[in-house]
Image 1 (spheres, helix red, strand yellow):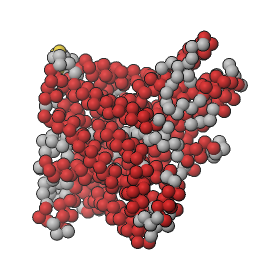
Image 2 (cartoon, chains in turn green, blue):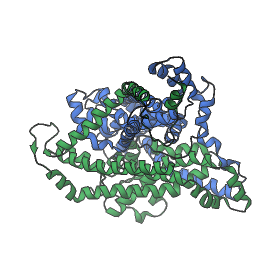
Image 3 (cartoon, helix red, strand yellow):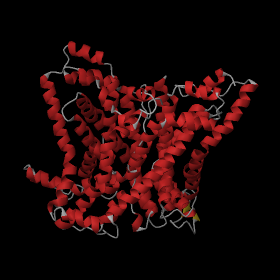
Image 4 (cartoon, one colour):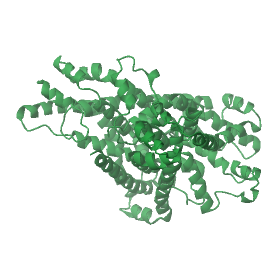
Length: 318
Length: 309
């Protein structure tokens, strides 16, 4: 084997585009040989994918056309009835819309508050490392714990929020936060603001690659610190914004514990998201087929988002 | 939890790991991205510095409020004794210290599975040439988007068929499946940034692919594999969904699953409420320790993970 072919085999491929081996016969034989080697290295991964993705998707497709319980016996074929029922259920429509609303709130909080927190930490303020850990903790410890604490704080009787309102003289505002739409949404929004740790991490990491000369020049021009944040660093970190937006959007479909442990969809499923919807319908009497249909719809939406992410990041690499 | 991609070139500390002599690229030397902040070299106005410090402290207090509430409520009735009784007596049939062991075992199993499978696959995607390589790679990556809740129905069926209910592996396997797309992404991105020279030398010496993998590839991948392992442990600690779906035996309950199991054990009296908060605080201790001491690894794994993608 020539040195040259080794080089090409080991070369970094920054654009991520694989080129199949050229058509010369020697090259092709080598490709076939390494093809078998590659297959051997990929075998464990493919086994995982075959069971937990490929088979799962096929299974979901089948079960979504049945009426069946968690025992998976005595199934009745019902065709596309489940899809029809799911798509016309206002609670399901609401849960998908909630996913997007919550993602939008997270994105808004990340691009403003998260960005400024990261920039302020990066100036080397006192205790910035300890504060960094505190900002990240809610996002990195089990969400079930943080959301449970938060849910308890919202309680009508003796909840920490109501007590705090009492303490600062706003006792008149005390209420049952999960009783009405408006305050229940507000409560979830506040919870989401606590969970912008990962965006803070991305900004904090990426700001270290900014050229210090640009910042010094603007400082000499008389810019204030906050002008530097807003007018220089914010536009400079636009690829980070994109990362934050896409990762939050994808993460929103995975945020199940968030709602499950804080509001549990209160009042009556109106703050529910797709995750809690599927979980609860799977546990209902003979609800597995129905849950499978909801899963298929959620999967399609999530995969479209992922596809857009891959296309957008590939394009911005060029 | 989700993985992400970012578009800038590899951060300097990743390259630093590569150029450092082998053996010294150990875990102790990992640095946080913040170490290189250009903002730190600016001479900011005194007034701005004070404003920043005040704003940060105010925000930190806001962030501490829920955690402080949990800790102070946990001792407001019954004091520290609440913790002692939680450590010695079962709650709804669950010993809390036992849940830490269960969580740790599942987390380690998942970390080993993901690291092994992702290392093998990352080697193939980065160092071997084969047809449809990029197509397959993107097919693997797109599963980053699959939410755990969307596959609970098939996972429940698969686990039932394979007899994986009430077993550690039964939980570790689907968790690993959900983490693998990110693992492959992280390993491949790092592997793509390795220099080709050592691999060329191995080829010239007649090493086969397996030897190259074991003797050339793996030693250089130590740092990203440690990153990945720590992220796996963190995500497994966070996972409530699969343990609650697949573990019914109270003796196998994990820490994050216990949050639900114990809910019913505490009523609304102030004393019981205190005990409930105490159990939440206690259950979060391992995760808080992991995050506090492993943060530089978490941060590097997440922010460097997509650096080439």
